[in-house]
Image 1: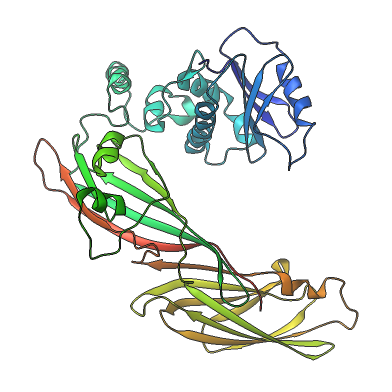
Image 2: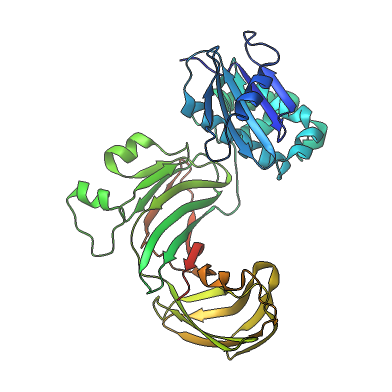
Length: 433
């Protein structure tokens, strides 16, 4: 397996912003060949991996108005390179927040230093931001701590050579705590009759670690495979994960053999787990819209929104976007709950409800006037879906549950774990009826 021969950061017109050669085996103008290859495809037929007649392999991703492209002269591990490119973008976001053409131009020195540290002879090395910031200390991104060159260099070497490279030793807190946020986003498409056409749950476990020393954590979930491996049956709902991804700190062998998540966490904020569940769930919200054309110049909407989750839960900041004719004007709204605003730029009205309790239903009435000259797209709104945004604290739609979180450290201090559950909307749409 061969690594990356060179890496390019190009603008949206294919002009070179940053280039780094790791092996002197490529023509200097090879990016021009890549640009010509791009022109052979449109946005629907374009492929992220391309090979030219000379046997060079181009692997690239797009981010905002930039193209991150690598060239390999011989057979290479494409998945490794894609993983590196996405990780490179994440690291740049940690430094610049917005990774765009302007931020690359303004910080080209830092970008070159990152490329030198993250790749060695074309092979990925250190990609952890917290370690890289120990290496790279330019004037623009100085750390707040006092300069201690000899000690810092020693720590950096120890971190990279240590098997736990994502956490440095000597971390101390007066109060030892760890916070877990289980955040689930529900993608759902509901048909005109209220039937579920598509439902998908995208979840993640975000951790904020404020623990001293080098603690060892064990996390137990209501994992269906765990109960089956133990020959046990759980009274609570068990979750069967379709796709699960861990932070590098998790011991994968432990999870594969025992279905136990054991890890030494990085310090601060990080994503411990991301997962996807392709399961059918009952819609959290249903919306019925009755449309009545009072005359050629007047249309009325009667909107009924209902929550289908348990009464003990409450959704916050609910916004229901109902499509209206693109030439609608002079809106008049009437509702006993929340407020309604007309949003011409989105061709919709937005019904905002600050708190929406479970098993509740609310009504809203809207009247719009229409011009006598009919817009050619006046009836297009009936084919557009209703969109809903919301957030439900202390609730997971999948039934995901943290069964326990054990914290162990050689010093034997007591630590407090905190767990919070949140369900949010992903792409939650209901077709107009």
